[in-house]
Length: 77
Image (cartoon, rainbow, N blue to C red; front, side, top):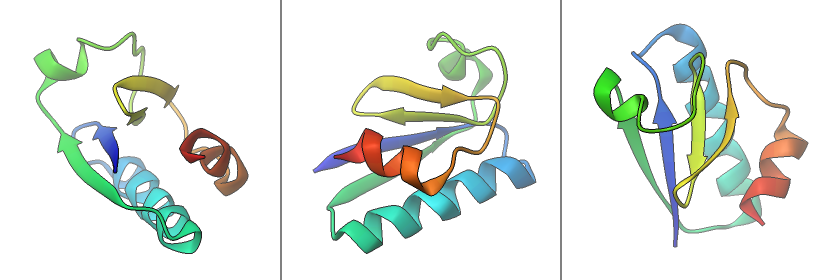
C-alpha cells in the first residue's frame, strides 16, 4: 500500500493536488493511504520551498505546483 502525504495548509492548490492524486490512484486501481500534513514543523522536515507538496512513500516528489496526471502516474508506479 502506498503512503501519500499532501503537504500544505489547506489552500485551494493543496485540495486540488489531493483531488488529482486520488483520481490517478483510483484510475490505476492502487491501494493508498492519504494523509494531510498541515503542521509547518512537519512540512519543514521535507526539502520543500513552497506548498503544495506531494510525498510518496516518504519521498518528496513535487512541491510548489500541481503536477500533471501523467507525472503523478509515473511517481505512483
